[in-house]
Length: 324
Image 1 (cartoon, rainbow, N blue to C red):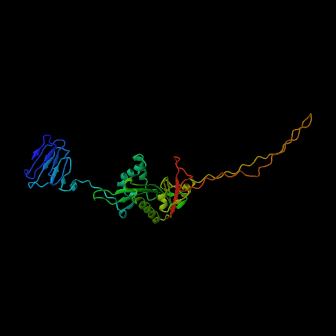
Image 2 (spheres, rainbow, N blue to C red):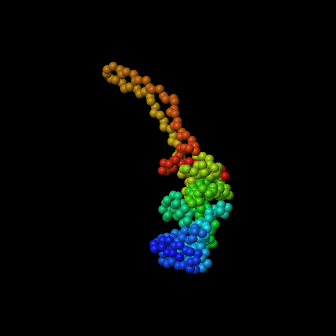
Image 3 (cartoon, rainbow, N blue to C red):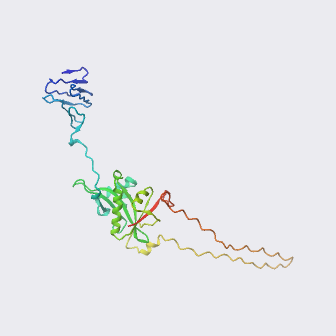
């Protein structure tokens, strides 16, 4: 056994003592075994305990308060960590095990649902919770896409969210809003599963058409069968105390005003002149306009590349619909 003065290299001979313990170690210690095994280990933490088994087998076991247990086998560079110290990865939810449930039926998940939506569209937490608290079977209705509980003690994981509202003057239609999937789970089919669940949910309750708007997800909705449509108005609230006739009165355009009667241009008799020559005759009346002005040009219809509609911020928005 030979120890260098700098204590940076340790050479072990097969006839070494059964056990060698170094504690504490310098900031950097490099022990080197004999050439038969060609293993070099660099230790950068202290204190470190280096233990060799009595049979002088080239197996090194490192124990440190800052690192999990590590074992190096001779002739192999593979590093094996103790399974008890390895971080556990949360598996992705199984699509077949997902469920769709209304928010008002799971009040214990309100906070998790609000965090999911605010991750995409930041908003005050109180305002978001108030909006989710308006969900009811009478619409608007907020639905959550849930995965099973990872453990019996934990709550289900909120994977996605969407809101359904009634459409004015279209009793068999619903407006889909606030569609969002957890950012870490996007691109794995959860958005399609959410939309398919919405369609089944609406169809089971007698609705036959869904409407929605989007800024940049046209291709996604087109693959699901949605087509470009016209704007509709969703009802923010519904109440049995308000008659349907009153609700229908809000979005209707005001009745057209009756056309203004043109002023009659008739020649007035010139006053008689008591003295002097007679006044010249009045000039001829202008010919009446028989041609009406051209109607205003209609905006071009929307396409998958451009649209004529804009949201409240002036950004282009696409209206889409699908029969279910």
